[in-house]
Figure 1 (cartoon, rainbow, N blue to C red):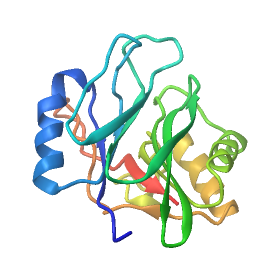
Figure 2: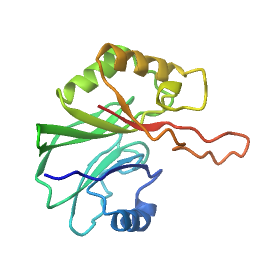
Figure 3: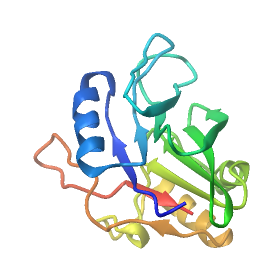
Figure 4: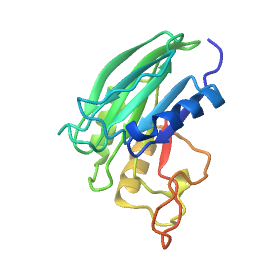
Length: 194
């Protein structure tokens, strides 16, 4: 398998942004798209030609939270167990690359929930020893490029979890969140861990 093009996107409601997503995937020839905040319920679905789509809804099945993975059908893969808790939703697949099995996970963690190091560790351990878990962690910390020099509680817990488990982040350092409130500044809250 040659290199793969992965992308992470917070859709803030995938149904109303499906055309935008399809255009982005086509223009950038994306192999695997990790989507957070799908806002899907059991009644929602989308189709994109030549792609398989896997979703995990919020556990209460209301239109908020949730994740999806959109992967080219030409890439050999299979879905693994969903992770759907109030504090974190994740859709995960396993692919084979030159080094063996690799789990790729799309995550969303709502801002109102605190997550302990133990819960982060349990989640990462559920993905196995080789994984990429990308999405909207709602965790701010300067280590992965957040603009605030002071991490929020989620950022501190995630940072400590990453250090204690010898995990790293993948981030451009550029903002991934642009608030609708003009008094707030853009920030980086979407990134991947491996």
